[in-house]
Length: 221
Image (cartoon, rainbow, N blue to C red; front, side):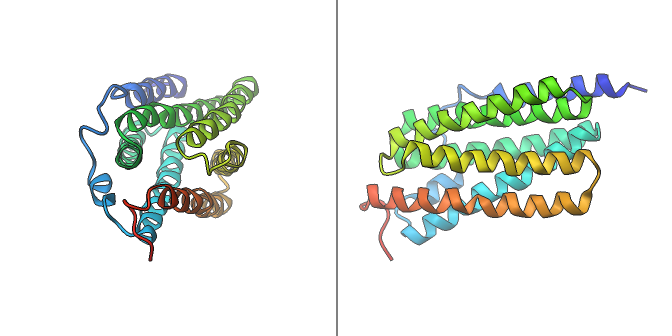
């Protein structure tokens, strides 16, 4: 039987492939169904679509971390695959609004924070405080980078405000992983719900700013 350490190594390798395997993909050239539906939709529907995608991100991330913590590789691979499809849908949505270059830039940036969460989860499973701290620092730096990215695309979204929202997202998912690691499943599901609900705080202002920036694409209600 494989040792738990070797299982974690396999999980890390599988994640590296999932996270980096299609970074060169032309997002705008192969739009997802979600991205296609965003053309000409009402502003309210844009908000619903972004809420659905970002809420799904939090839920799928929690499924992946739970499987990783318990060394269930096939389950982890399935969850990581679904999570990456969600990332591609988000990138397709960004590309449909801001153009091909923005969509292509978004995907590897978004995948980057998922990779950092995998680092944190594996460090938690291995009991390495040093690696946990490193992953948290990487995630906090990522929040600033993501804030700068969205601000460059939509100046109405202040970089610092976006970074703070992403940091809250990071903390909320970290709390999920911590509860999962301690096998406090009641708390874990409470934290999953909170993490999913928090994504609305990112989706709503993003949708409103996009609709204001591109009124010809998104009709007001």
